[in-house]
Image (cartoon, rainbow, N blue to C red; front, side, top):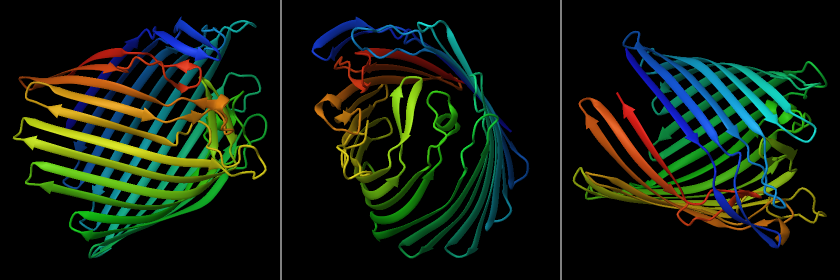
Length: 461
């Protein structure tokens, strides 16, 4: 029997000076109402019933109280919006290895989420409370009937209920069923995967009209060829079906109960090269290109707590993901590794050929993005340098200069060390972020902090 526990606490006042160009005027102000306090804890237990049966249990708790800083428009930095969250869940997992050819897993989970949003607008104090209960059950059966052939069958069920204190709230209930059948066949240097997922979702509401529910069959297929010892090629197709969440459908002010599910059909072609030289130098390279069409893409335009939900109609996606990793070791105590990645994403709105935004990049989606990091491990200290790059984006699908957001890079360093005290382990870590001290914007008119730092200490018993 094994028992593990984890807890963490975080506090930040969120106060920082920023410089932001708003139109023709440069604003130099101090951010307010961006404080946060969070606490989380979890308890894990594992028990070996027999040589072939295992039982695991987890309990988790989380609470946070934070301010929601408003948009900086026309010198106005005031915001009184607050958000308090509580989340509790418990889950149990059972696993039975009947034999080398038959295995089963089953799990049950209960999740409770509570949120309270408050504000002080001109009309007076406002407070809304949201509660969501979810019960989730899943079971999977795996079998190996023939040499090289693996089959699995999975059945999932979820019951969700969302209640709100708002007048004329829908207070919806959703019952979801997911049935999946998957197969994997390996012959020589080829590996073939195929799956079929059936989604059936039913809803009812206490007030108003419920959505029509969602029903869909989603196939997927992929193949991998190990043409050389260290080189692999892969090809695949998948039909992705994303149903709108209860929040997106029913939250008063933002929800759209006529929101359609997002349907994607994606093709992928990729390659991987991985090789170890003299057991001390390891190199890994990957590249993936993909193409697909998305129908009724769900777009959220952020406005802090409130978002605007809508379907974008038809979106064409053409992308390329490239990554590289190299690591060099000297004995057991010294090593250096470098990782880099680059993503090209051309996601254009092709809903209406007569629209002014036809074939324009969709909102808040950069065409170019990437990251790089270097980690040096020594017997005394670990040092890492990280850089994140985000290309230009547009706040609307109409790609004109007025809607353009500038690209930015974020540089950071991390210093950490672990200490062993008897059978216990102490870890101290220092992070310095945004070394360039730039108030870049992830969301327009919401400037991010300049250079900031964090000191964290963890103790493992």
